[in-house]
Amino acid sequence: MKEFMMIFRNEKMEGSEQPSAEQMQAVMNEWQNWIGNIAAQGNYSGTNRLHSEGKTLKPNNVSLDGPYAEVKEMVGGYLMVKANSLDEAVEMAKSCPNLMYGGSVEVRSVMTIDADATSATFLGEK
Image 1 (tube, one colour):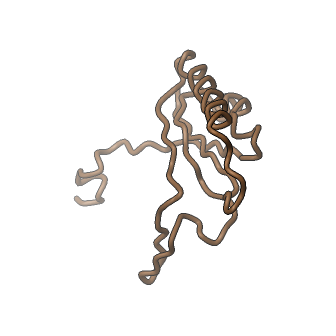
Image 2 (tube, helix red, strand yellow):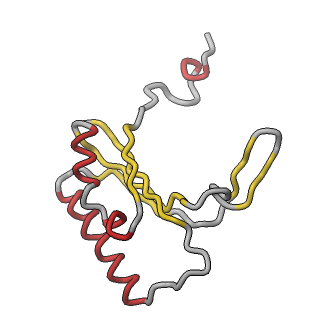
């Protein structure tokens, strides 16, 4: 099996009405059920949410407040899954709760680094 990353994007919610605690709990339950189903099938590798705070570094020592400060969409988290193909991973993503709330899911194949990152082989040394 290969590993795939599902990247969850949503539009920034600046100044908009925040959901109630009950609404947030309902959404959290949907996510837990969806991820739990993937795990029950043996396809779960890991996940994390991302805070909206951060910095984006650009060439010439330019630092911008926040990730993707100049766009409306931001990455809110990711999920690592195991699947036999990209199409299989996309099928898993089709039931993602993020899609029910106007967000998107990008599914990408993960390229593994076979050599240890500190080894001479990885660093290109002879």
